[in-house]
Image (tube, rainbow, N blue to C red; front, top):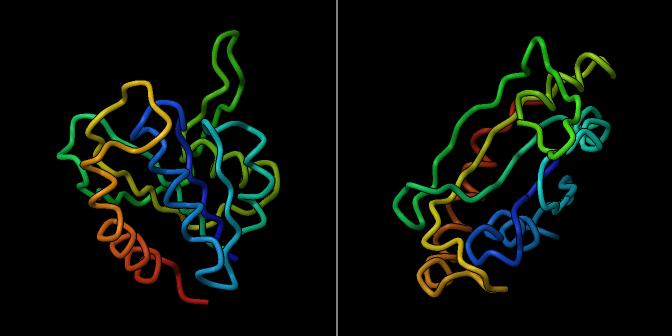
Length: 151
């Protein structure tokens, strides 16, 4: 099973691109399990441990709007997913590491980041990213197809 985790704040325009893309992938393939969340949290370790391949999708500041950046995600050996007083956010490598430590399975993973044009308050993507969304979706599907490990 391929686990797609789209994350970001849907009330901050392009920060919602991870959730938007993940939701749009629903039904694309039978072997997908889609999760949309505001941020990465320790609760994601269990579903990650049950997957064969984990795909994290998020917005990225400081990149050309609409640019798609792909980074492999390796399990962090000394994963610390302890929660501080003011944050509940952990990184993809820490989640994979915790899956290995707690459940004995750290799937292969990839982080797909999309350059954002705006993080202003708003409940829709910026017009710039909205116009690019079909091309971005095509790139994301191709990345998933070519990045997943062979069975």
